[in-house]
Amino acid sequence: MNLNEVRYTIAKLTDKVESPEELDVRLNFGHRKNFAIQWEAKNYDALRQFKVLMGGQNQPMYVTQGNQFGYSLLPDDYFGKSSATVFYQGEEKDVEFLEDAEFDNRKRNYIEIPTVEYPIANVQSNFIRFLPKGLQYVNFSYIRSPEWVHFGYKTDRGFIEYDPVTSVELPWDDEQTVNIIVLILQDMGIQATPEQVKKAKE
Figure 1: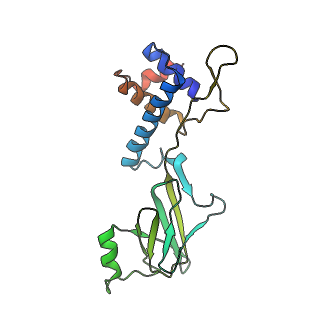
Figure 2 (figure 1 turned 30 degrees about the vertical axis):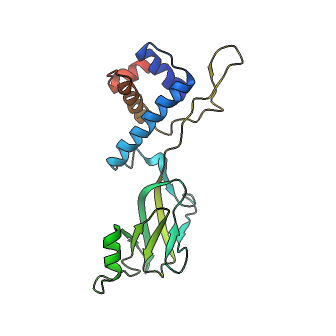
Figure 3 (figure 1 turned 90 degrees about the vertical axis):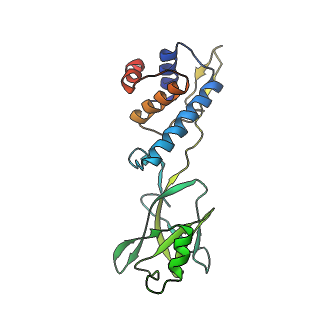
C-alpha cells in the first residue's frame, strides 16, 4: 500500500483530506508507534524490513574489534540487536549480551571467564565491547531505526498530486500498514478495526 492509498483510506474514514504536511506528521506518528509495538513484542517477522545483516545478505561483513580493547562501533542507524554469533571449531556459537554490571563481573570471574567458545558482549552508547578481547570477527545482525516517511507531491496541474518519485514510503507490508492506519485514526479520536480499514481501501 503506497502513501497515496494510505492518504485516500484515511480521508475516506475521516471525511477529511489532510494537507501533505499534516499527513507527514500523522504518518510518522503511526509508523514509529507501530515500530515500538512490534519491537516491544519482539515480533521480528513484522520487523523484517528493518533487519540488517552487516555488509548485505550475500556477503556478510563482520563486526571486528575496534582496537586492542575489543570494541566495535555500532552502525549509525542501529536501534537494537537481532543476533550475534561467532565461529568456534566449525560451529556457530551465540554471543551472550549482558548488562553493564554483569559484563564487568563476568570479566573478573575466573570460573565463568569469557572464551572464544562462550563470548560475551555489552552495548554502550555507540559501540559494543566484546570479551574475550581476542575475538576477530562477530557475525552481527541488527534492527535499524525507522526512517522518516514523507508524502511527496507536485502541483504542476494546479492541485496536490501524489509523487512516488519524491515520496519516502512506509517500509511495512500491507498488514502492518493497515495497523498503522488504525493507530493514526485512534490518535484522531476515531475507532476503526483493521477490517474497516481494508474495506475503505477497496
